Length: 114
Length: 114
Image (cartoon, rainbow over all chains, first blue to last red; front, side, top):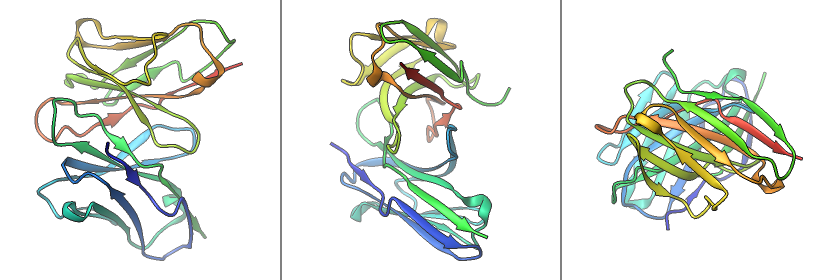
């Protein structure tokens, strides 16, 4: 059974700092990995998707990397801003079977202090 | 409309009542997913449709839960005889069946069972 872990559960940083959010998964047989942002009481916004054959993806100040063999992904946020404060979740899709359901971590709640 | 929509956004009900939620996916997406998220946890998979066919149901989906997707368009999730443990955010997502299958989420329906 796939398990996704995100540690720490919460993180507080001063504005302007570059930061890395970690995600680990137990089964390396994944099709892709998605990073999401969730604001309090809201739905999920897809930030980046990395295919299993890719090493990284970039969008603006965000860069996500994937090391499938070691079961790790990181989300790098450059020059953090108070507006980046939210919960960040990673989720993996299995490479086997017809179902493309996602298995999520519990998320990392980020607070960026002005 | 360019995103996934869900109605209602909030639902408060008394224990034992039945509730029904609706999800309208992105129009060209043939895959539709339901997830449930409780406080401090990541979303957990409930069920998945490809077009009108329900292809997988999680063991989390007890006999009190039923989902439909008539004509492969919108979907409904019904909970019968609600229990306090059903209180959660119910999230709907959709994706294309081809390609990377990136999942896009709706704003969710927050259910509170008194």
